[in-house]
Amino acid sequence: MRANCDYFGSWNGEVERVEHIGNIIITVARVWSKDTSFHVTSFFEMKDHKIKALDEYYWVVSSGIGIYRYTSFNNK
Image (cartoon, rainbow, N blue to C red):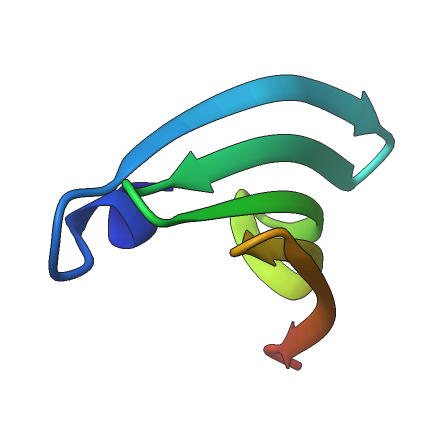
Protein backbone atom coordinates (compact mmCIF):
# COMPACT_ATOMS: atom_id res chain seq x y z
CA MET A 1 0.00 0.00 0.00
CA ARG A 2 2.77 2.42 0.91
CA ALA A 3 4.60 1.87 -2.41
CA ASN A 4 1.41 2.58 -4.34
CA CYS A 5 0.61 5.75 -2.40
CA ASP A 6 4.22 7.03 -2.63
CA TYR A 7 4.19 6.56 -6.42
CA PHE A 8 4.68 9.83 -8.29
CA GLY A 9 1.66 12.13 -8.30
CA SER A 10 -1.03 12.41 -5.68
CA TRP A 11 -2.30 8.96 -4.62
CA ASN A 12 -4.48 7.76 -1.76
CA GLY A 13 -5.06 4.24 -0.48
CA GLU A 14 -7.32 2.26 1.80
CA VAL A 15 -7.22 -1.35 2.96
CA GLU A 16 -10.84 -2.46 3.00
CA ARG A 17 -10.45 -6.01 4.33
CA VAL A 18 -7.80 -8.43 5.66
CA GLU A 19 -8.28 -12.18 6.16
CA HIS A 20 -5.84 -14.77 7.58
CA ILE A 21 -6.14 -18.43 6.55
CA GLY A 22 -3.23 -20.53 7.78
CA ASN A 23 -0.06 -19.10 6.20
CA ILE A 24 -2.08 -17.06 3.65
CA ILE A 25 -3.06 -13.40 4.12
CA ILE A 26 -5.71 -11.98 1.78
CA THR A 27 -6.17 -8.23 1.43
CA VAL A 28 -8.73 -6.16 -0.45
CA ALA A 29 -7.68 -2.57 -1.09
CA ARG A 30 -8.37 0.51 -3.16
CA VAL A 31 -5.74 2.95 -4.47
CA TRP A 32 -6.85 6.09 -6.28
CA SER A 33 -5.78 9.41 -7.71
CA LYS A 34 -7.74 12.25 -9.22
CA ASP A 35 -8.03 10.39 -12.55
CA THR A 36 -7.72 6.66 -11.79
CA SER A 37 -8.93 4.07 -9.29
CA PHE A 38 -7.46 0.59 -8.65
CA HIS A 39 -9.31 -2.15 -6.77
CA VAL A 40 -6.84 -4.83 -5.67
CA THR A 41 -7.12 -8.30 -4.12
CA SER A 42 -3.77 -9.71 -2.94
CA PHE A 43 -2.85 -13.19 -1.71
CA PHE A 44 0.32 -13.28 0.40
CA GLU A 45 1.86 -16.67 1.20
CA MET A 46 3.99 -16.27 4.31
CA LYS A 47 6.96 -18.30 5.59
CA ASP A 48 8.94 -17.39 8.72
CA HIS A 49 7.15 -13.98 8.87
CA LYS A 50 8.33 -13.10 5.34
CA ILE A 51 6.47 -13.02 2.03
CA LYS A 52 7.16 -16.27 0.18
CA ALA A 53 4.76 -15.60 -2.72
CA LEU A 54 2.35 -12.88 -3.77
CA ASP A 55 -0.48 -12.96 -6.31
CA GLU A 56 -2.39 -9.74 -7.03
CA TYR A 57 -5.52 -9.27 -9.06
CA TYR A 58 -6.56 -5.72 -9.81
CA TRP A 59 -9.19 -3.85 -11.71
CA VAL A 60 -8.20 -0.46 -13.08
CA VAL A 61 -10.98 2.05 -13.68
CA SER A 62 -10.05 5.05 -15.82
CA SER A 63 -12.41 7.20 -17.86
CA GLY A 64 -15.18 4.67 -17.21
CA ILE A 65 -13.22 1.75 -18.74
CA GLY A 66 -12.21 -1.23 -16.58
CA ILE A 67 -9.04 -3.24 -17.21
CA TYR A 68 -8.22 -6.48 -15.33
CA ARG A 69 -4.57 -7.23 -14.54
CA TYR A 70 -2.63 -9.92 -12.69
CA THR A 71 0.85 -9.87 -11.16
CA SER A 72 2.79 -12.59 -9.40
CA PHE A 73 5.90 -12.86 -7.22
CA ASN A 74 7.49 -16.04 -5.90
CA ASN A 75 10.48 -15.97 -3.56
CA LYS A 76 11.41 -19.65 -3.32
